[in-house]
Image 1 (tube, rainbow, N blue to C red):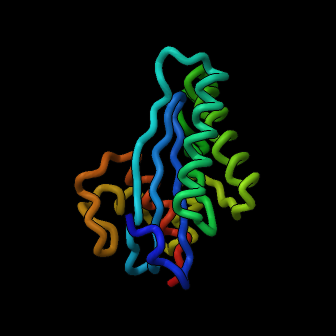
Image 2: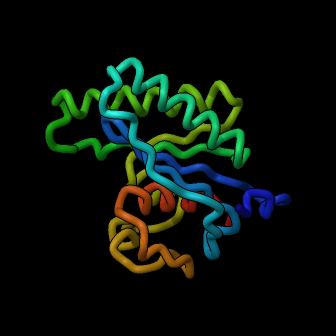
Length: 162
């Protein structure tokens, strides 16, 4: 993979959590011309307890950080007005987000967290939702990726230099 291409620039790891999974993207380049270095979706084995799933998640993120050596990690949180914010599923997602933030900090990476609108402010975009609906992101073809991987790409790209 091309994880050594961004020698002089920033490499950003974008993360988007689910109750027993996470989606990730490593992006380099600039805000106007992002380059996707790698991406994926990771789901813990369904036979794992929650504790085992969180430990598994930590190991996976640790490996991604070691592989790509990002300068910064962007963790996308749910919108503040998200429906069902007090459900078991929402609480499980929060615990996964906690693991994502913790392992990133332990690896001495700068960590930026927030909802989509927070990352939109970083990118100078008024509507990241519109960006998500398009087939590409500033020249980066992301038509083959699902919405959650796109979110990981988007939050990572939003932190790239202009």
